[in-house]
Image (cartoon, rainbow, N blue to C red; front, side, top):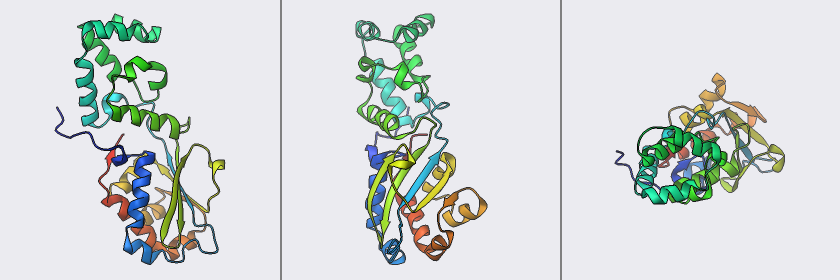
Length: 242
């Protein structure tokens, strides 16, 4: 049983609320403001953070942070058998068949089925009556994943960085949705390492953990600001969905 409490959605990476909290943290950083003065002036300083390989196909609901898993278990275990029966009447036929084929009490069979659902399967293997029993946080997270991650498991985070501040952030599912000057590309695992503060952005660029699409000389010219951006994310109180 987890002792961790459910946190506000803006603490969970990668979500759009987390990105908005990151924008606020950037704008509160005096170091970043100093080191990035002039960035984007007379050139496009906006960034796309391209997060590839988000493990929707392999990670299940049971792999979510333990406080979310425990909250799901608590909600489902609190349902009566008649409530579960009514909920299952609206379930997709293949899901209902799998639940019926399992052994054990009905509540345990339903809970196991839910926990073994991968994040990629959620749109097809859950339904409104079941989603209504999920903790609000999980429902919000699912909506974030459905709306902000492309079909290939890539998330594009847009940051409008200009002269010492972050003016705007956005999440998009297609690069054509925004014009940008720079694009930082890496696997989800590498992004997690960076956001946790376990790696340096310049070192990770030089080692090939990240790729940059844009003027590398500009990045090196403002390397202190790049380091500040990474340190700001590392100082945030973040939880990781995967």
